[in-house]
Image: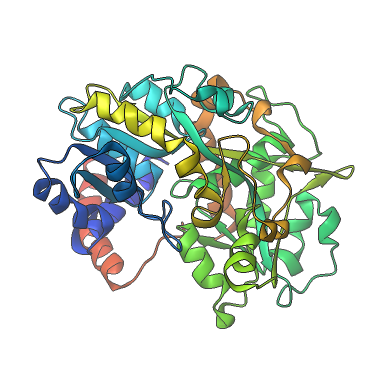
Length: 404
């Protein structure tokens, strides 16, 4: 298991080294903006579609010169965390944006953030602070439930999606159309894994809601289901007719995107139900001040602004999640999404301390379950560069085998 994960990490690292990536592109931006007043690490899709220039908006709000805010775009929350940890002895970033409630325990263990309670914390939606970090190590800025998103016309199944059961996904007609993201690489993928653990239960201290075991569920699901390395790759497959995939792990808000921007209501989202109640893992995304940040005072001002009405009013139509600030009315086109008031969150079934103590072993168990039902594909984007990276690793692995 350890060697399999090591191989995975080495291959990804080699691919990043050989291919242009967001991380490598933005290393130059750090050097070019060494005199910036504020440096932010976040992921590429933050408020990016159709787009709200939050960096320029904050400069105007704070009275800073144009270009004072340097945004370094990384691939995902895991990349943000990894980069911040590597620099914690001499921090470059002032603010981290995008670490969620599944990864906050790792940020806490690595001691890379300093708690800060923003000025208008009382305006946040009830329960989000405790669900993310009650001490404000991170401040929530958006939330949404992990759901199954599908193309209405293309999805061909006899199941009633209005009363979908988690085990319905194991039917051949469903799993042969399903795309799930690798929980080791994707935050919605991890959220979906945690959903299954919360519902099936685990002997680590999670009571079961339904019969069966989550490991056996994933073992069976892997036979026919497509594993993708990221949400972006999954949606590309979803809209590729030749792939013949019409359902993917996404968010309860995903149908709103087409409805709001293109008046397109051809997609829908669905959540597993038990006795008519919809259940979903609630992802809460947060931002925080880097410990020993070069510009701590400005970082705190940025967090104050990020939960202000000015910024939070942009969440619905640029982030496609629900804003963390209460009182921001969703546009009418959000009727296409699943009403959050009808969703029962699963998060309380896996408290933060339980998640922190078991996440690594759960991911290991998931990996075993998945590979037992497949040929061992981990949802990596193996193009020619990936194959080349693998070939480079073969002598290393053979040498390691001899040493053992």
